[in-house]
Picture 1: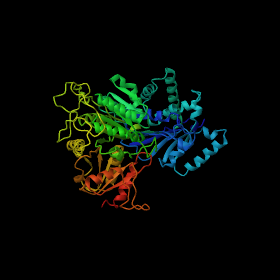
Picture 2 (picture 1 turned 90 degrees about the vertical axis):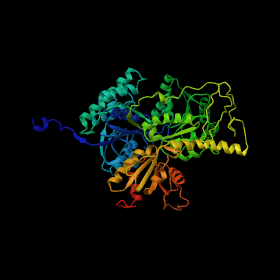
Picture 3 (picture 1 turned 90 degrees about the horizontal axis):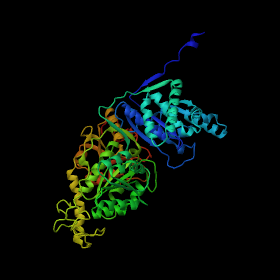
Picture 4 (picture 1 turned 60 degrees about the vertical axis):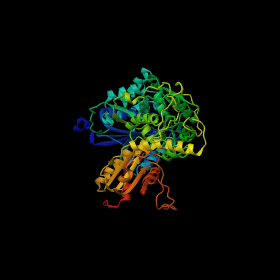
Length: 628
């Protein structure tokens, strides 16, 4: 017998890297997102930095085997903290070649990416499907991809009758072996994910997981090793919408009034499972307007209430939000932004509601607008929003977006504090002479009277009113009440601290952002600084009022530029001039507030911004060598 016949197979090549990005893509309904969620959560628990982004088709039920129907999850793993989804994907598990083409055509894949593709389509009896397979492979051959056919369907059929209900766990097994994931942790995560299913369903999913694991063990000739660093303090792993819901509970909120809308609805899905345990209620109203009305009514009666929506719902709530401002009724509204205008891009990320959030109400309706930058901040922002709404008797809008909503990332487990909760209601009789709007003429603040307090009866109205809540149209009364509502916002700004510059506090370019772009901006700035550019970053959490001290910060830089996921014209586009150029929304706010010539770079790709794209924009604003 020859030596070659008895030689053991060569051990797999181990690729040791500080980070790696993987995607699982399928037709809608095949469970690729569930696979990605479990893989990301387990990786975080093992001590990797993680950032995930759901890939969601715009249609609810797109047809199978079309690029437009690609659904799945992208997971960026790192040795250290990961703050964004990165640039391109290194490894893909695709359930058919058409969804893989979708990712190829948007330049989502690294030139040398490894593609594990279900190959049953190459063996189909349908000649059209075989032709599509061959055409796809020809298109993909333009890059240096390594394509590995995997007979997922054949494998899954050994355990389940319908492979569409098994490929996701099989793919999870492939990834578990390639990336060295802890199988016991994965099984525990599967048990949690399918906790409402039978024991038989759990066992079947574990069998599929192990089947994929062993296939990869026998057939994949490489492994990816990313160092892990188990956290010294407990971590929690969740997406931004779950963090919003948990923050609402931690803040003492008692009512979530909503109407279903993508991508905000999963907040109510989470709360509907747990809110009642903490004395809370989820109310699904008949429409967006009613949801805002229910929250305002509950808040007026003394409950701590919030409502949640996305862009189209924000438009519908406009009149009710003006009512909250006029009546000085505390209200928190969460707007999980998506692409617009109109119904726009329901499942895609955008930051295009900023100006609508601040100025969208009729008349003069000053209120507070905040934007968390991370999933951890999604939790804490709800606590701050509740306290501000009640302290300043006003509307507080919290702007998140689809990137934060569906992205998963670990963060330190919060230590709960009783001070986060709302104080007990003051139900004592009102003081003699106390008025519903007893404005302090310096601050605009007044004590809130809860219905039921002896001597506190008054008529609530959305009409112009005096300090007794009596309808009044006199010029001096309307001027004074408008000034009092506005004064509160100025008082809040006086209590805020100036934002912190990321990098040097002076230089050639300052990049300013808000919301979920923080991680990508700072990574791009780090790369630019490594190339010798004198560039720094600044990220804003308060947008109305703006954080103080911006003008002195801006003056230390030769150029200031915002980076936003909303549209802006580029100088050089046909007919676009400095006078008629439509600028990014934050840029407009900053130019108005500081009188500094703030430039902008805005894009609406329907996906999170990539650090490399921001880096290219930075290079374009600064000549090579870093001199402005």
